[in-house]
Length: 252
Image (tube, rainbow, N blue to C red):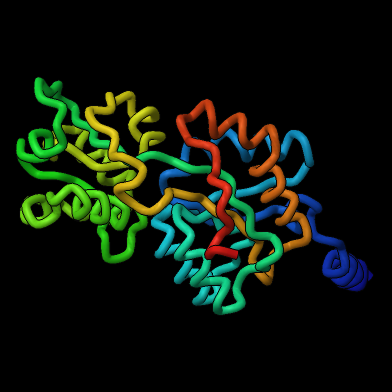
């Protein structure tokens, strides 16, 4: 008799619904430079909506390729338009959900003060940390800006190419690189002074698009809307991000 009761209980347990939180929890794939923003936005979103979310941070390119490989992401937040377009062209994000949520500036930072704030002088002091321009958005912006100023050929000989912009920032913060080329929001997060800000015309506009993936839970677009809304925009402003530019992702 006891065995029969146990068997019935086990069978019933198998039909119990999963915990509500587990079924609704969103997985957010966000560019590494979004760490501080996500640390603040996610709890605010959960408090308002009751929907939990977890965040995975890496270079935009790494996250995009993980999504292509089938990683269970609900939302993708990229540090540039190109990787969002790359996923859109492959039908891996909901194109109608794409929204620009932030902008940024490109700066030179260092853990040491500098008497000369000219970019050529700042970048001649030793090793320069920057995102890998072969796939990291911050690195691509940096290469474009340096090329525009006629400094790329000189700098690349001493450049340390990092897997994402936060690694480049840390190298400069610890003094392992004489300087780093990072986003203005990264400099603010690390408490490092901006020694130089690259002119906006020296590189493509730095834009952060966000979108729900094609396999996302229904709540994913609510998170994208939250990023683009007043609460999300307030967080971005406080952390040193710029407002998103008017142009649409991919020119659309």
